[in-house]
Every structure is written in structure tokens, then in C-alpha cells.
Image (cartoon, rainbow, N blue to C red; front, side):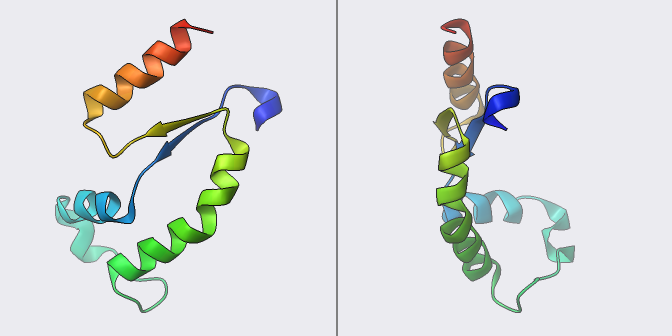
Length: 81
């Protein structure tokens, strides 16, 4: 991926992902893939994938922030390229 463009990893905590999923009415329809609670499942997935995402990214963005702050970070990086 790094050879074909610029990769941004929007890094978030498990807590942020769970909160965002719970704010969506469709979350109750989301089946567990592991039989674990949504918090345990997301925590495990992030723990497993985070090193790979960091390795694949040119830039890591803290996506725990509000949408406009995340967009400002990405925009600032883009205009500096």
C-alpha cells in the first residue's frame, strides 16, 4: 500500500469504537464474530491489527478526537506534502 499512495491510519481506542458503534441504531443487529462482548471483540481486534496498521501507514492520526479535528490533522498533513 505504501508504494501506491499515501496511507493514513485513523487510530482509535476500543472505547471510542464501541461508543461510535453504540450510537448507531444498527449496532444491535451487528452479530458477534467471536461470541465475545462487543468491547472484548473490538479490544482484541485492535490489539491484533494495530501493529500492522502502524507498519503500513505513512501517517498515524489520532481519530479519538472530534471529526473536525481529525479532518484538520489530515488536511494539514496533505498541504504540507
